[in-house]
Image (cartoon, rainbow, N blue to C red):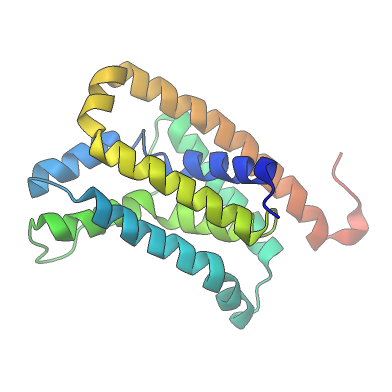
Length: 204
């Protein structure tokens, strides 16, 4: 049975990590280079990436000998640094969003870099795998679908949202979700680290 409270928590975590509102400047930059973007294509590719890692990612971890809780602890560090980027306005992750010979094809740009890594990037994938230690796969799947609904809406209304919120509004929103994500990363760390060191007892 679907747990609405757990689904809501998973949704908020993914929403903060995907940060589609804070990614509007990047989306506008991609649209400027390509001339246009394909919201449905970008959303479907992002959804496929997330769902694949939701159901197959854990099996991949088992192959390399890593349990979900260990990955959750590692993922908490990733979330922590993403939160620092959002709140402090610094750049810690430098992802290569270009490839030699990549043409300015709107269909290509809607997949790389828009779907990956802007929407379904390393932080999002890590978060989905980390959430397996806290939530059921059904709750996470519904949270992903809800976030994709938000993503496609933002992609369709990017210019209007930018005009409505303004530069200052986007910055404030990004920093607010950064603080929330910072708290989530700490909770994810403390909630899983005790399982790796069971004899040390719970953290105070």
